[in-house]
Length: 83
Image (cartoon, rainbow, N blue to C red; front, side, top):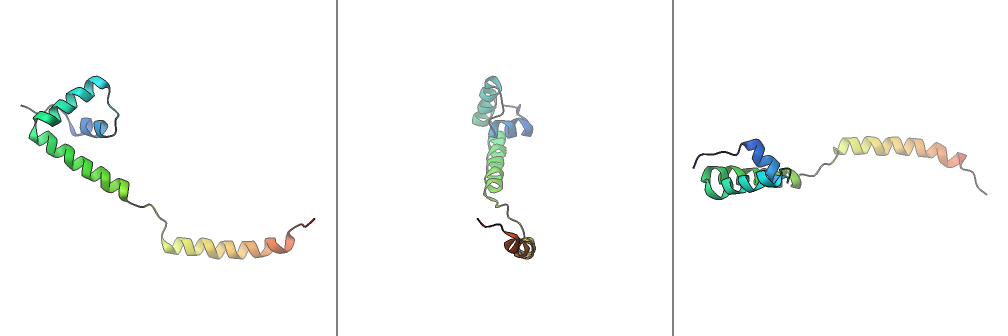
């Protein structure tokens, strides 16, 4: 069977962004075409890796923010209004 689903179709399908009629056709391609199935499995692995990546600022950025915060908070403590 010839491949009818494009990589873009598979990505949309992976993220549940395809209409029902396309979803059925893409799933049929995955089920019946080994090349499409292999590509889809590869995309699933890539999705998993992207989902697992932690977005975290560099330590140097965190240190800079903490230094700045320390400098600016010292002046505010003395100006605090108490009741």
